[in-house]
Amino acid sequence: MSFTVAIDGPAAAGKGTISRAVAAHFGFAHLDTGLLYRAVGARVLAGEAPLEAAHALVAEDLDADGLRTPEVAQAASRVAALPDVRSALVDFQRAFAARAGGAVLDGRDIGTVICPDAPAKLFVTASAECRATRRYDELRGNGHDVTRDEVLADVIARDKRDSERATAPLIAAEDAVTIDTSDMSIEEAVAAAVAAILSKD
Ligand code: C5P
Image (cartoon, rainbow, N blue to C red):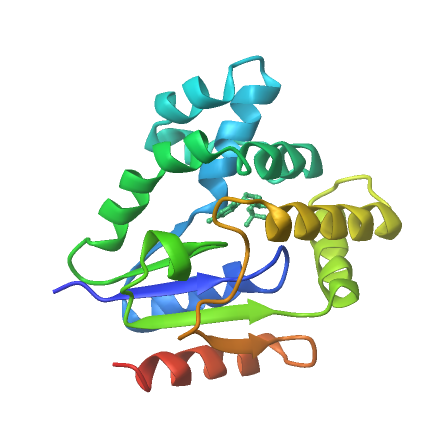
């Protein structure tokens, strides 16, 4: 039997951390769907056309180094606004969601477009300031030479592009449980997520 957990929300709200913890808690597989768009974005930065890049994507691309940089994030959010690119990535995500044993997918449109029938949907969010601070700490921790203002500007620009695009904009599904992690520790956020999922089980 498959059980899908859909986790959506803006950049750096804690989706990744929560998704990995939730997947470990329930023994489910986890797909960070942002990596699909990042891998396409990286191919486009290397000179490929967006749709060709999306069709050429293979699972191994998701493990490539260098997908977590701000440049690739911006390229990802630009290719993610292209309807053809989004369509090209649907089957991979739905096949992952249907795998036996349960799956957690995190992204922007999992509960609304990719898995509208998922039994458990979360919308994980936090203030832009708070998300910028977390992403800044993470990037600096990984040795990236960025300023906090640059990171805040990146977060705001991606939020705007992700929320305003015509196809699959970032929006909470009507039946999603919203978790605002601004004032929560990681442990509190994970506990809230697990409780919300159990209430749907
Ligand atoms: O989650 P992450 O920051 O890695 O995502 C990178 C970009 O990919 C996002 O800014 C968004 O534009 C796009 N994305 C998307 N739909 C998803 C996951 C990511 O449009 N399901």
